Length: 141
Image (cartoon, rainbow, N blue to C red; front, side, top):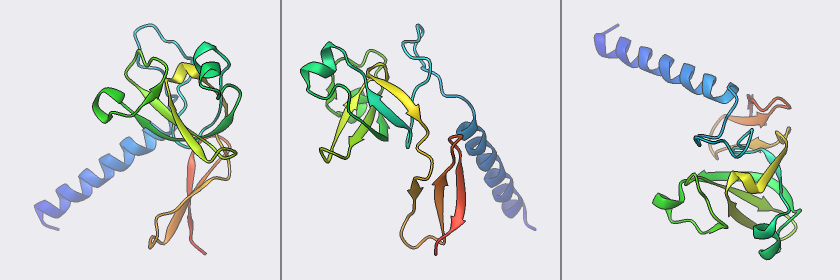
């Protein structure tokens, strides 16, 4: 095995370890003064909280999966209400076939959305969400 091949194998192992750890550790709000105990992430099932911001937008009480995360100052996404930590999550509401960008304090975590599937066309495996929030790789049928 050449030096480059050993380096590439070691780098791949380190990246896998980092990704594996990141998926299993609790995600906390980065803010100095945490506004939320748990910051929902991709695939989590959440409900939009009832407050002045969400009621004014007519979305209070709706629920759905988190479809993405963003830093509004660099991405330019339109966030409903303030995002004091410069972080927003995208909640997809199936009943309306729309998604909304909100600060984490405007949503409440319901569950990890067990059973969700994520597959990239052409890949031999797909990711299936477990009840504990992790993902299993299963062969595509």
